[in-house]
Length: 281
Image (cartoon, rainbow, N blue to C red):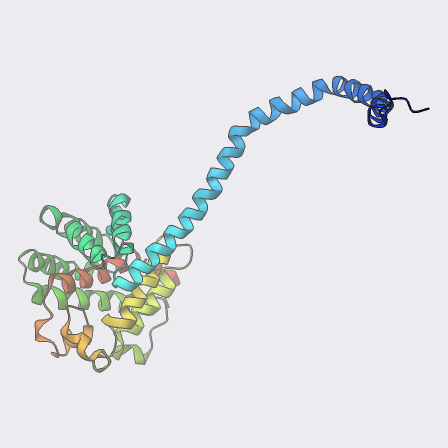
């Protein structure tokens, strides 16, 4: 006879609960037994939290620094400027800001920053650099020329400062290459080749300015020591080209930009070290 109170689903649930009770009790005992362990792990995570956060922040900083280097590299290579020993003494936030502006479309930002810093306070940074050159044996013979070029630059007589700064760079590179035994007969008529040799030897991967040597070489290859005929209409723009200056191709070479780039070429070489007498070749 059918029992109206019979509910198969209810009976199933009750049976399941009864069968599961030992497992539920076992789980409760397990949680109770391992409670100290769980608590210790929780304390450990709390203590490690700041450490892990610092590690995450460090990784993020490294990634951002690498991105920043790439942004900086693009800005310098495209704008045709480079870092020098003297330029690295200014507040890094100034160069960072210029790189940001360049990345946002202001293609004159790098050149404007360089000119502003070197012209500041009556060209104080230029003067400090030239005086520092005198401490380098390679530059000592050229110090009177450097001081004369600096004075001309301050007077805005750039047609006088540009060739002198270029001659100083080539004289220093010649002396350095001869002292290191890498000077050959072809170097007599190849100023750019001498300077590149000096850069390769004097600014290896361990040097602080090694990364900027790439920027300078790019400027030399594309503009400063590029064949004048290959520049074509670019020669009419405000660019520094050694051959156009010293071979009388471009009478209007005397500009603040060209004077600063000629100075910066010499300044970059100012950390070349004369080898000891016994090691000279």
